[in-house]
Structures are given as C-alpha cells and as structure tokens.
Length: 418
Image: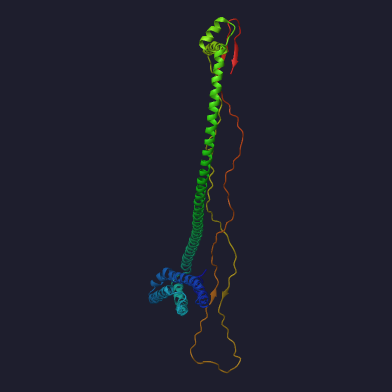
C-alpha cells in the first residue's frame, strides 16, 4: 500500500459519513450520534497520523516548516469544530449546518494534504523510508481498529450486563409485588378467618351455655331419682344381710375332722382358703432356689462392617490457549483514476466563460481492504464427570467367642460354637 492510498482512505471514509449524516433528520438522534462518533474517530485518527508520522519529517526540511505550521493550525481548528459538534445536541436545528462547515474545512484540508504535504514527504524521503512510514502508519491503524473493537466489545458486554441486571431487577420487583400481594391476600384471609372464628366461638359459647343448662337440669333430675333408688336398695340389702347373718350363726361349717373343725371354727377361716395358702407357700422357695443355681456365660463375635469414603485418584486439567494461524482471502477492489482527453469541439460557439483562468479538481480514489475480525464459536468442549458402580470383595478376619464343654466321664470334649 502506498502513502497516498493510505492517507486518502481517511478522507474517502469521511466523505461517506458526511453524506450519510446529511441524509438524517432531526428525529434520528441515535443514528446521528452513531455516525458522528465514527466520523470524529476517523478524523482524529487521520490528523493524529499526520502529526505523528509526517510533521516530524517536514519540520526537518527548511522549505516545509511554514507548511507544517499551517497544517497544525488547520488540525487545531478541525479538532475545535469536532468538540463543538460533540457538545451540540444532535437534534439541534444548526447541527447539519455545522456538519456542512466541517465538511468544507476537511475537504480543503484533504486538498492541501494531497497537493502539498504528501509531495513534500515523498520528495524528502526515499522509497524505503516512505514504505517504513507506511508500515508504521498501518500498525497504528491496526492498533486503533483493535482498540475500537475492544471498546465496542466492552460496550456490548456492559450493555448486556445492564440489560441482564435490568431484567433481574424487573423479575425481583415482580416477585416482590407478587409476594406483597400474596401477603395482603393472606392477611385478608386471616382477618376473614378470625372474624368467622370469633362468630363461631360466640355461637359455640351460647350453644354450650344452653346445653350446659339443659344437662345440669337433667343431671339434677337423674341424681334425685338415683338417690331415691339407692336409698331403697341400701335398705333392702341391709335387711338381707341381717337375715343371712342370723342363718350363719345358727349353723357352723365342718370338715369331718375334729381338730380342724375346732381350729377353723375358732379362727373363722374357711378350710379351702387355708389349704391354698399352704400350697402357695410351699412352691415359692423352689423357684427362687433354681434361679440362684444358674450362671450365664455370654459368647460374643465380631461382625464385619463395611463403610465408604471418597478419595482423590487423579486430576484432569483442561487448558484453553490461543494460537495464531496465517489465513488469506482475496477481495476485489475498485480504483478510480482521472482520464484527461483532448478532442475537437462539436461546435465553434463559445458557451460559458472563456479566456479566463479555470481550475478543476477531480479526486482519484482507491478502495483499500479494511481488515476486521469477529469471534464466533467453532466448537464446544463439554467437561463433566460420570459415575459407574462396581462390586469389590473386601476380605478380613473377625473374632468370636467359643466354649469347650468337658465331662469327667468322657474322653473327647464336646465343642459348642456360638
């Protein structure tokens, strides 16, 4: 790429942005802001390249010092106009007029650069030096483009985060509203339930009081009737007891043995009850004696209890890194050149001004490739863990108690295993 092509790429892009801005209306504020931002970045980048790479060379030449002074003043005025337009509201009625003034100023700046600055640089430097400057300028442009892409990516990330935060805030607000509505509904339901419970309790109290009064009256009646019936039964039982006592007194119980008849008759105890008492007292000492003669020997054993714990058997590390691969792609570019032809006029009649000085300037343009990079997902690497179950046999030894039972009249002892 030549120095002229590189330096004319900025004015060509600026001319396109100027044309698109002129077509916007006062209501298209967002579009104007976006186009003006791109225009401002492009113009500032263009004048920065002049001041960084061309002005130091021209200041060393005695014939071009004044030219550098004028160009630096033009750059300062251009930055002032950009700052004024940046602060001006984009829907202001004077915005397009000031854009037209800026376009005229930059167009004159581009003419001066093409007719004076670039020829002076090419004259002062050799071809290799010019190509070195071109390489530096291309590096500067590439860094600026990368910075713009990074800034745009940061803006997209920030906008996405703000959008997610906004959506999350809306969700939380909606949930809070629903929760508040639910609390209010629950409070209303609780109030209605409390009023209903109060009414029900009042009705239940009234019913209980009425029921208690009725039951009290019924109990009083039943008690009175029961008391009368009990009195009658007590009198009847008393009369029967008196008669039975008299009959027992007249006849005494006999067992057929003189001694027992005399003893029982004297003690007042029935013979059957005396016999039962003697048998029970004879059985109790035998059971107690059997319990005292027993001795218990416990036999224990160990039981194998298998537990589980998780141990680290290895670590798998997945590292993502960036590699650079050279790629190439062909692109068709347009080149516009001025063609000057001389021909015989169709008629000898003079039209327009004649015999005066006239200068016509036609700009030549070349399309240059603009390299941009976008990131897209090529493939995905999914990392997960899978669990499989297997059966493992665990072997160990356990202990247990054994007992040997020996008899004096046997030669081989018997062994019992618990």
